[in-house]
Structures are given as C-alpha cells and as structure tokens.
Image (cartoon, rainbow, N blue to C red; front, top):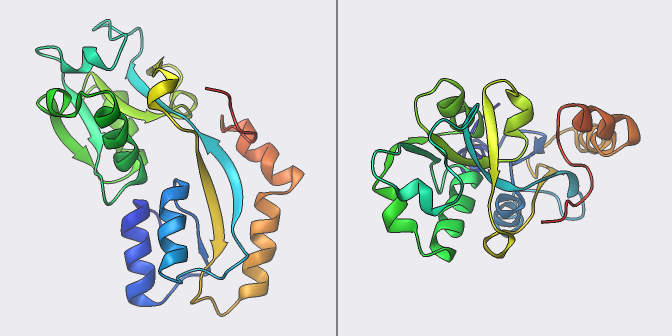
Length: 200
C-alpha cells in the first residue's frame, strides 16, 4: 500500500494489517513506536533525505531562497502536514525561518503523498514545492533543486520496521535485512537516495 506516512500508519493500526511499516521519514516511525504499532528492536534505517526547494527545470522564476516562495505571483505546493511526513518537515522549516504565514499565502494546493508533491513541479502545476533532495533524481529533466540553509534543516531518514500486526514476522525481518544489505543499499543509491548520512 502506498500513501502518506500518517495515512498509512492510521490505516495499519485501524485495520490491524501489514507486515512492514516504512514511512517516508523517521518522525512517523517515532509515532508508530509510541503507539506500539511496530515490533520493538526491528527498526532499521534504509536511506537518508534532505529537504530542498524543488523548482521547474531551468528555474524560470529565479527562486533562490525560502523568502522567494513568498514573492507575489509565485505559486507553491506543499505536502499535507499530518498526513505526509514531508508536510510536517516543510511546516517546521517555514516556522523556523519565520516565513510560514507569508509562504502559505502562495500555496495553491496540498499534496497527499511525496509522489504527488513532486508531480506538482514536474507537471508545472506550481512554481515550487518544498521536497526531498531525491526528487531531482526522479525527474532530472523536469526538476531542479535549490538548497535550504542548514540552520533551518535536519537530515531525515527512511526507516523500516516489522508491523505489530504481522503474522510473518521472521519473513518481514528478512526483507528489512535485505533492504539494508549491500545489495539493497545499492538499489536505493542507484535511484538517487543517500545511503549514508549527508552533510548539510
């Protein structure tokens, strides 16, 4: 099942289903652990993510900073906080930069997943989104990235853990071991993910 991290966690708990929980950021694994929705001790880090500003290829609106997202006539898309981990990360960045109210005046849509968030730029529906650095690798000919100052950031990670509702816990743990093996990590690296903590 694909979806926003918060949406998936709620679904997993309500339906008591699933073998592995793999949210898009560590924040939601923390929530899953607090809810006892995953098996203690099975959490592993699969890859790392850094928030960036994603703009249309060539950066036609010349967006260079978070403050530029608040400029008149700039259209912005954000992931939906509370449902998508990227949305929570975006809100935290904008609050820390003191720009949340100004930028949100330019937000024309909130996306329900990371995939939908990057598509907003890829399909030219908005001028910019706050996204993950890996989005550039998903569509290198359609998305460029603008770095966000490190004082507003923290590195996030993609974790995986065995669901508390799994009836195949041993097999689920075997798959997580594969994800974090040399072979599994090579697959993630091939698709643009950082498999070591990046410096910001």
